[in-house]
Image 1 (cartoon, one colour):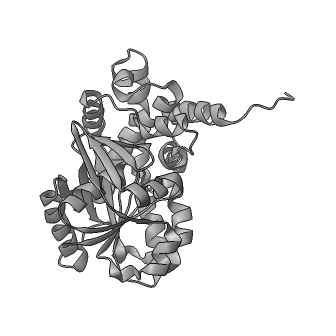
Image 2 (tube, helix red, strand yellow):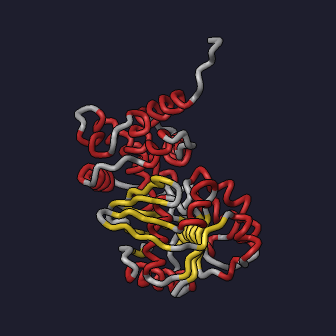
Image 3 (spheres, helix red, strand yellow):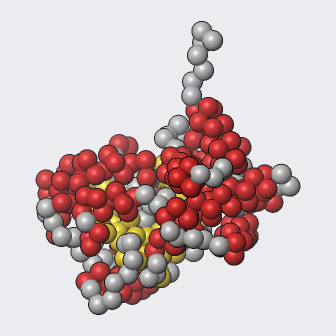
Length: 319
């Protein structure tokens, strides 16, 4: 059994924590505010389809983790925070993590989290990953709701190296995650998988936050689906800046995947409704920066990004 620290007990982190706790793993969660207080007082409740699971949990803020544990008390640290919180997390936990050897697995949106982790910890301690075909949100403090197969794809970052500690650990994690009811795949090219997910995220997250529509409504709408497809195509082109070189078949596979999946309210739409910071820079921003490096235009992403940024900016009453 593994001992895991899950940094960020939101919809995704809370769901995976419940699966792992049910399977008998030792899990410590981090959270903050009312959600943390509820986890400490009432435990974690997860709604998944017709099922409801409840567990007492060890939940605490980052400063308590630093005070109570050494990093190598854990077999792996799993980061499920929004990418907007990565920088702050590294400020709070980075020095603590730096003085250990524990591997860190990122299950976050975007393609820039692993480089941030590697800049501090070194590539040998970083595992890239993504949660696939899953929607998850905090519906009230201490309660999360999730839907979808909730698969994990993970791998050595930036590339797989034969016969090393990380590959052995990934194999063990895969087997234990699978036994816990989490479909898991180990990839030997995790950057490729991260970019494929960014194709979907950039296609639907910003436009859903702008329009208030779920993924099915967007991808079946006669006009919005063209914008979704256009933003996904621009992401495919942007991947070339990182040497990933996605192809037209990746675009069509990802478009059909999200078009035929459940009608999901995207995380960016939920964040906008709740007045929280949006993962806009790590999704649309990541695409736009790389298109600028390549010297190519990204009119769909540029327009939706600009509209969404403007809609978040309070108007000047003197204007």
